[in-house]
Image 1 (cartoon, rainbow, N blue to C red):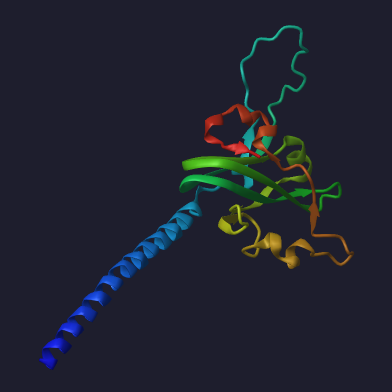
Image 2 (cartoon, rainbow, N blue to C red):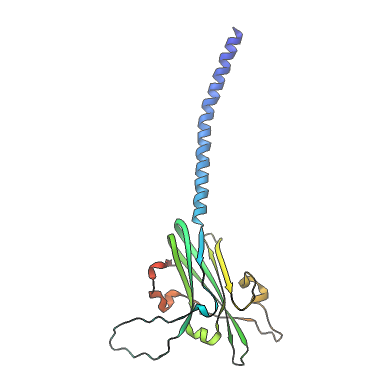
Length: 229
């Protein structure tokens, strides 16, 4: 008789424990699913890929686009020669349905000759911030105007870093032609702060690298570009 009562109590306790364990397990399962979903969403949001990167050197040079127009009472064209820009077009992909913000930081090095025919190296940088970026393929573009190229030389190195809203680097790439440079040369003090025996800087920092919106190329394929903040 005692054995029978003990058995019934054991069965009841086991059943109670099972009933308690089931909702706990379900809750843990749901929590795990939410955590995995959140992690997956975050990972998806931060996925950016550079699918086409601009070359350095002569291949980066592009002539000013010409447009047909009809306007009265304006002066005729002064410069008969079609000038050349150093144009840096980047194609990139985003996998998230929407990306709040991406920041593109460009670094460009050019090589020319000074008035004494000595090699002259210049450094340019600019930042472009895009917002509300839908999933898919997009373009980003910056340029050096013709006057800077003519005066200080053509590009020999170009680099790009793309960062997310939290400042983390999501993608980067760099190319150089005709010069040996460290992988992240724009961060290397041996490059950026290098001086010759006379104390002259190896690189002269200059302004002038601009987003395409400040160039005639802004009118070409505008739907490929996102809103600049």
